[in-house]
Length: 198
Image (cartoon, rainbow, N blue to C red; front, side, top):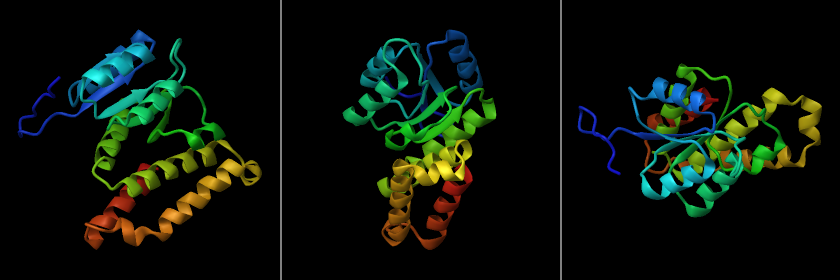
């Protein structure tokens, strides 16, 4: 499938909504279709078929679906090396299991049109950044999600959270390497955007 071309000649980003509740999928499509090329998959298996056949930029992925769950779809996306960014858009409150998961954003339902647009734009911008900077942004999202849901003593007792914080600190120490190819202003802007996304 060839992406639509915007008026300025640039291709319109393609967003795939993976949602087993058809009314929710239709609502998300209505919110997004004026700005993006939107495709809908009503199951995990349909999502993987579309990823094989179509060039997808961003996936909005429901976690709880019958059959192939969102978690399983996410694992397959990682294994197959699809170049898309993934936002979990789900009613499941984040828990420590998210530390090992390969998503880029975590949006808790109910969400708004503005929140979905902001998430997609953040992920599209993040695609342009280096892999290390993408990892840093994703880890910071996970840290923020856990800090929202867990109290300080629970966080302190978690080995998963300690590992997450340790990796964030490692990446922060190597910011000079992340700065390659960007002037200081652009790099500071990218980091500020990450903080703003969180």
